[in-house]
Length: 171
Image (cartoon, rainbow, N blue to C red; front, side, top):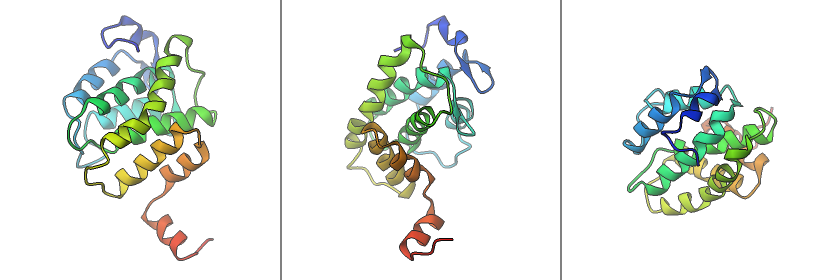
């Protein structure tokens, strides 16, 4: 895993250029792991917009995922659903051709982190989950087990789609 102090972050790319700002966002995330009130709350808003921008991912996305997964694994108490959703979205984007190949130095840590999502979901299973957490946890499990299409479907579910599915209303 690329250390947060490593200057190579500036060689990695995200949606807005070099990724030298990502370590500071990850440090902030580590100090504030609980559920957020809004998708616009930091550091999640900046992490999402930089690392998984409109469905595209970047080399910095792959280096950041192991840190996000590690932070969730070390967190005590409830975590924000984005700890499952963002790594899942990165892997779905990668698998569906919306990002570059994983640079070799970061591949092992990245793949281990995706697999670790199963354990992270289990570690937080006794906490109260709202619907976004439930869907994100299920999607994380699916992506960790290689079911990319199921993970993508779960990421795209919302109250409207669930109601349509339950009432068999398909347009």
